Amino acid sequence: MKKMNLPSLLLTLLVVCASPLSQADVSSQNQPQTLAPGYGALEFTAPEPGTYQLPALGNAADGNLLDTKNNAISLHSLLGDKVVLLSFIYSSCSDVNGCPLATAVLHKIKTRLKKEPELVGKLRMLTISFNPEHDTPEVMQQYAQSFQSDGIDWQFLTTKSEQDLQPLLANYKQNIQKIFDSEGKFTGTFSHLLRVYLIDRNKQIRNIYSVDFLHPDTLINDVKTLLKSPADTASPQREPTAALYSAGDNKSGYEQDNYQTHSIALAERKGNATDLTKTYRKPPLGLGAVPVPVDNPSSKAKISLGRQLFYDRRLSLNNTFSCAMCHIPEQGFTNNEMATAVGIEGRTVRRNSPTLYNIAYAKTLFHDSRENSLEQQVWGPLLAHNEMGNPSIGVVIEKIKGIADYNRQFERVFGKGPNMEAIGMAIASYERSLNSANSAFDRWYFGHDKSALNEQAQRGFKLFTGKANCAGCHTITKNQALFTDHGNHNTGIGYHDAMNKPSDTQPLQVAPGVYLNVASSLIAKVSAAKTNDLGRYEITQDPQDRWKYKTPTLRNISLTAPYMHNGSLTTLREVVEFYNRGGVTNENLDPLIKPLQLTGDEVDDLTAFLNTLTGDNVKELVADAFAAPVGESR
Image 1: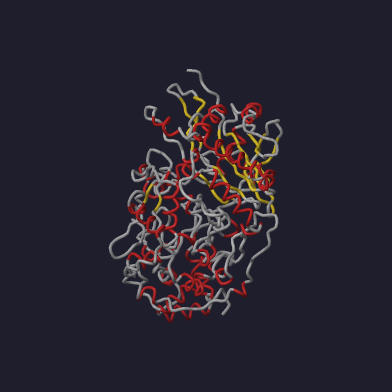
Image 2: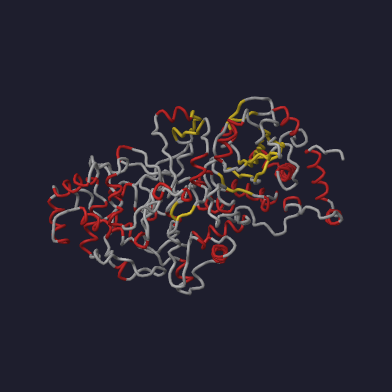
């Protein structure tokens, strides 16, 4: 049988799908492949443009490209002046529901543009090959001939090399794998998930379409929706009061050329002290009784002392760093702005700052579960060279003894001056009071309020406990939900981090809207050497524990980005998509981790459910933190 070239195949598909006989023709074949929705008529009435919103999903990354005339061009130079539809394909793909689908849908949009000339100058379509070895500029020029038309801005691009391609794929979360035959030879085909990106004029990704949702009608409506919106609406907007409970130096929109600071002066962030003892005397709905050690019963005075120590920078070696600088109250008691923590004098910490919400219920602590009590845990950061930098326990104790106010408080609370045991007890008592629940989920599940969760979140919960089996590790019981099994699991994140070779260049933002591709070798010269991280293995020395990390609680998860032990996933949707792919394969991958086969709608539903786990007293706990004395202030 003569092999049909791809442009001819696409045009044939378009004709067949447009024919009233196409269904009969398809059914006459033996076990035909079901065509994706994008080839046929939309099976529902799309909402009118402008009647809905498309939230910003992150920045559109830059990359080094070649056009069909072999001219070097940056991706960002093609963004910003128009709304953009961006697809990644390879020209020799023969899967009708793969790359040909993306090109066919854009071809249909091109035809629509001829009938709606008001859109022609406002939309640009970009098709980028991820097979530079075969798809040279000359090949892409030949490929484009069947699709380009005068007046329609549809550009076909490739890259100079795999080296230029890889950071582009990584930044757009495009998982591309070459297929090899039994002799280890590249077959010229790829395994990949089809994605088409909608990018606004502020270089923000506003929608990501997969096979099931890629349709010319919905794409055109989404484009029109963006064009109806003011150019600056892509920037996340916050209510004035909500801003007080987010990062003080709010850099939302910093990736845009027209960025303006939203920073809030420290004087405006006024606190309001509360009685924290109520969070363990009467735990919020969804949490059980707070585990309080028999030898360290909580009290209002003890919590107050621990709270003051937690926010006091004088507990670090050079009086510059407090516990709260890694566990920032208004950022979920973690750090939303850094994948991994940074300690005293800017020293690198290899792991993400875990949240302290509901830490009282944790049976083990740190990402590798190396401690089992808060009283002991506190000394790890105090003595770590790259965290608070103290050289010994004695140095910390003597410094606190030298502060008269602390001496008085320790005598009043413990009946003795500061020592190792009492310092750990005080700080642990404050951390044990940061309990937050009575979320929308709790009111629906435990409180039986049927209106507390919308239908999408309810569908997400059904997936959480069923098809997706999230509850296999993030457990829920009849009377409470801690959303953790307190165990350690290998998801492949640690394995990938250890084995993945960094790209030769990395994008570096140097000013609002300005990015440079900087050689990784240059960055390495001014960075600390990356240390190995084998997870739980470092504690047990058991080879089966390589790259295992503690299961985190999911409570308040929408507040505690970025995610995973190394902060490598920036949004909840990325987390869901990671597990949907089945993690990263390795010899110690946890047997519970496997591909979930979730559709795009199901990913949305599961993400919506996770967003319902925020406790209703978060603002109260953050406001109390703002009221805490800092250092010598009162």
